[in-house]
Image (tube, rainbow, N blue to C red; front, side):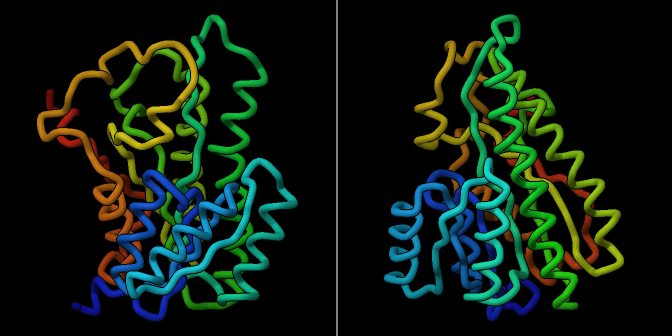
Length: 253
């Protein structure tokens, strides 16, 4: 494997890595040589996926972490650093995607989406960013937002897209402040991916242009993982505050 695309000896921390898109990201990073630490609110599922990666010959571990709870984030990040060392890669992937129509919107729904999808990544970036700066080796932060920010939308996503818009804005602010420490920050916008979380999302029927089938077909979790991998590897050392949309051609139809 070319050293430009090799993560051997690196620690990669993936939130929401127990299933869905996060599981695909974890697999791709592990195959590139990284030791992947899966951070997830579902400790049992996170441990099971880490065990699957290990059984496949990769390095992996798991940590229980609730993005909506600041104390849990602080403790979980500290445990990762203490047990495995400072991550080279942080992937802010975990998120909620339940739907609620704008005019029926509740503060509870709004706050929950933003707590997990926006505030959680801010806390992760703060905690792991401090560890990266202290280690003095640089690093990579990849935020997983949504192609809904550029048009692949359905009804009921006001809170979700607002939180993902905040995450995309966090990329810009973080990229500026962390550049002096050789830490890059970038965004991946997934298109339609048939994950268990997406299928089980609560709320009104997903009506809108986002239901249109992309010309290349539905994406799979590993497709998103490949975009994350690019931002994570040495070859992308001068790439920061950039966005890759993995939408199977939806944006050209």
